[in-house]
Amino acid sequence: MQSNSKLGHVILTIALALVPAPAFAIDAALLPRNLSPWGMFLGADIVVKVVMVGLAVASLVTWTVWLAKSIELRRKGSLALQRTRTLEGNMTLAEASARTGDARDAVAQLIQSCAREAELSGGILDDGLQERVALRLERVEAAMSRQIARGTGVLATIGAIAPFVGLFGTVWGIMNSFIGISESHTTSLAVVAPGIAEALLATALGLVAAIPAVVIYNHLVRGIANYRALLGDASAQLMLLVSRQRDQGHFRLARAAE
Image (tube, rainbow, N blue to C red):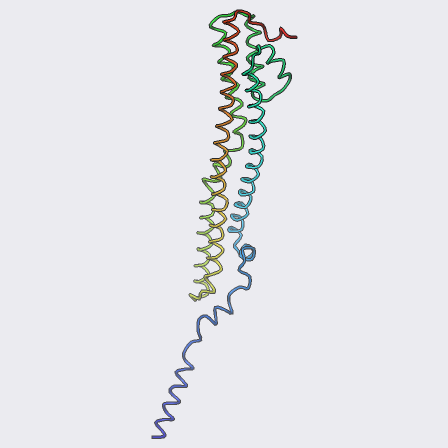
């Protein structure tokens, strides 16, 4: 009876010795100490690092364009509104041209272009004058619209491709993780987790770059549309001014006030 008890004790001791250590103990020893975003960046593969840096630069470009275009739209929109309201007053084309002077803002260029056509027409009051003035105004509006929209295309590009660039970094990081599993001959979480974390960080950066770019692009598009509407109002006021002077029969040249 006593020998059977000793034999059972020996068997239990051997069984406990053969049981592997808990996986979490190994993982805890192998896990890297720094799993912060910066630590994961430093530990990432060179390709994933390039992807992350590129996405960070794209995000910086997005906010730079937003700041620059917001200031430009606010300044030019305020000036365009002010000049358009001035055109609503009782004035002639010559007076409007004299007030603009050598200014180069959009509405000033509309006024100067209209006055230039009136000067070249020699004061001839025919239907062709209004058609030529309308054509000039349309060309100036198109040029000013292209100028104010300059730089917004990069936001659309960033919003479209940043998620895919981040996805590329994710695929590359996961691929490296599986290569690490194959080389270490283990499925330990400590081997897989760092690479997957780095891969997911690339995806997160892709979304951080893309989402603000899309939102800011849509916001700027609305602002540019409002600015174009102001230019359209200014052109309409100039056409009304030319038509009014023609009907009154005292059309004066743009340089008559000089």
